[in-house]
Image 1 (cartoon, rainbow, N blue to C red):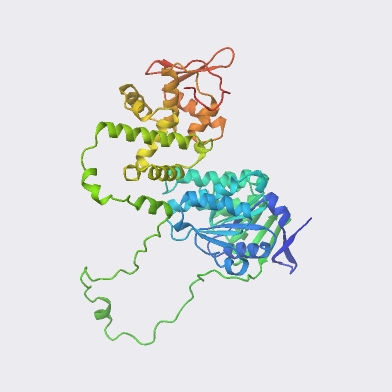
Image 2: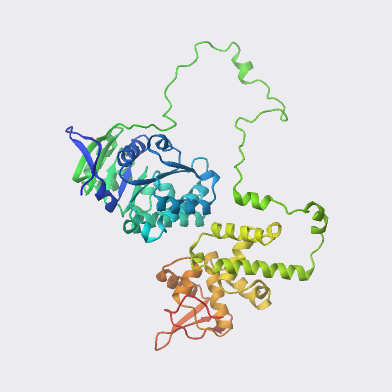
Length: 499
């Protein structure tokens, strides 16, 4: 059944319709420079389809929060929620079929990527019973799926790019229809853009973007400059949900408006200041009494912050005692408790695929429950402990000189590979079979067995290990400098390391 929604009119005056059923199966890419009308196009699409399909909008600038009053969208302010809370919110919104707007306004680029990835991950990972059709709109998609590394950390970029890739490459079978809008195709990751089958191309000025837009629409390169002459709100359309050949259209009006309209020209004040120099260049007030132009608003505390800030009864009376050097037995007992907490977290089969930030929050809550909140590890120490734990190396074992040497050798590898090196080292030292591809992938935080094999190849290229297969396909890994070798093990073995 065809469900057509009106997007506007063509140059001939005919209604420009979009097949919503087809869009859910083929996805949409929108490109246009700032001021071309991309946000207006997305708003028109969302308003026309709101009564027919569940929606979620990844909104970096807070432009779409006004949909809530007219169409009932739930606005989620990402600034006041943790990554784990947003992941759960994504799952619950999908299960209960609630349309949402994830408002990322006010966050820096790093946290925008992390929170968007967590929310998209929650939407993507729901059970099969809840794979309802959903329109997922991502404005300024080049921020969340950049073609090259930017100012954010590699971890945040990988998390966001992975979530966007899942949405566009694997989302169709889960009922997710990705609609991504970008100012520049050249800044958008190609594997994300390539999955769209419908295109709406607006005004574009740079040659490289005009050329890519022409290629996507099947136009000749000599016609690429037509994108430079498009008026605001005019787009060239192509795709099974829009038109079988390039079609010019003008986007129709919308019922709602963004909260912040484009600034308009205002006349200067008619009355001039009597003494401009005295007013503008007046001596500044003393530093102690000078008011800030924009007071810094502290973020509202979440549940985790309140738990960590709370002090047990009688804590004031024990302050001086806590500052005394701890007894070695007390330290050993504390290390054991931290080790047990981390083992309990990693016992979850999905723990290997969760973000470090999510695991760290779970760790802090468990520490608080165990009465270790004041002595919990910071994030850097937690990363090191997690790397060792995934290799099956406890805190006490890691303090042995032999393992200190192994840790030093692993330090030459990227952080996400160090745990794999230590896992292989443990198997070799204890005479266990070589870990299978599934165990390596789990320690690396991926479900891809091919990526696990590439990790081993990378270590071999660095001269750290040598991989060999025997006559029946079992793999042996030798650690070059340590002269340790694992027992033969099948690459297809399960994901648990013996012992």
